[in-house]
Image (cartoon, rainbow, N blue to C red; front, side, top):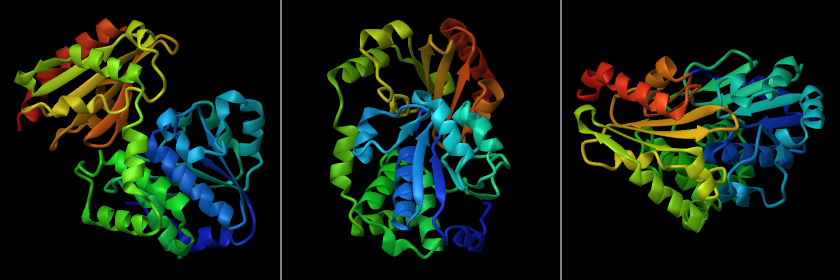
Length: 338
């Protein structure tokens, strides 16, 4: 764990500043939740704060941004690049490397702003003056709550902040079932509920707000699942044609990979999604126990993440990528059967 100098950050926040808050590309619940929460806190403190996301985010998270305050870099990169360059402070949340924000990363690196990273992924880059990194935390949202407490500002946590943080913790823990869900995580969630987070309402907004097309896409994905019990592995795939057929929208495949782990005896689950626009195959990996998908992804598919949850990509076509994955499994048979 790397801790930040709270006194230095408190000093920076004493006077009104122009602040930029940034999530990773293709932001999920933890990225959007942490950014919305921190942005709201900074505005309550009298700062001019702005969230800039590299690209758009899923519809099921839009309720956290009812006033459309989150700016999308892809929509106006020239204006927003200037915002980054002319900022006083930059907070980067839920990512550990500037490559995770695409072209924005060059401007963050160039900016003379005071930079703070808050993240729970492994191997953080050293681009920020202050790095709060803890791979044993359930989520960046949990870390943001601890950060707020370190600043002695927990009394500023209103229902909007609490709801955003609850959302990130809930989604990044798989509804509080993943291994990094600790007693401290539940204590934080308890405090957030006291401060106005409605768990039942948030759960419905995130998980029970599906389109019919999304459910058809899930059914199609599960019909493609291949189960290899010799290697305790389940994997599935989606072609671009299938995505188009079921009117795919950003976020529609969120959580699909977890279904593989629900099969008795399966320890490793993967999903491969063809993306013709970027000419890559996107990959999500999940595991149970000690099987390290962060290591697997970093070594084989240009990615990384956590021990039990990681992502990556392949520049080969879908067929070749699936064949590579299948051929890799025997190399990990011992670890998968431990």
